[in-house]
Length: 281
Image (tube, rainbow, N blue to C red; front, side):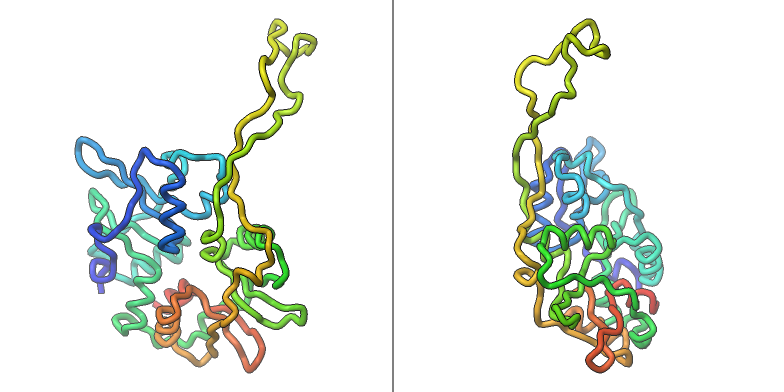
């Protein structure tokens, strides 16, 4: 199976165009629940692919408004490459979406596209998930403010947190998508303090001093402070270690999720992410 058989073709790929603002991307990511969006620029020679803008970039760089400065260069692949090659590239580069480029943007192949191929049996899905699951599980306390939970996910560099109650039992799942859905950009201003030179400062150039108010405009991503319990998914889908990658892939597609906790009896034993299923290829 080739990338061309699984990818979303250019005609169906929603992109943002340079020049543009972060609001265009934020709205798109909130509506589609994607992790990133392709960026293009129209030139005299036609459409030119510039890179991707991720939801991480929007949260980590709230003061940057111009798309051109938020774009990240990413690896690309051709339509003739195999699905296995695409899977290897995603795992090696830790990328969820790989642009398909041959002179111009021809489409996008995603982790979800590969998961669909595994679920349908077009590629190998016989590996048991017990051999693919990770045992290092990112967890969050159910009463943690969402602002703190967002930082925990960022520092852990994972897009999810298994939510635990006061007894340490699994009670839900929180993802980056849940957070980006309720995030918004707010405007404000900040006092610059006394760092501007006046005529008495030795380091001032010939007594140059500031004129006017010492305030500068600021922009921040605002995330609600209510507890995780108000935003998490409480009805958590789980798998046992004997399920195959194909069966887990079908569950992910059916429930529109990117990770499934692995349980042994009533105990949380690991986490199976969609990218882990790619390891089976």
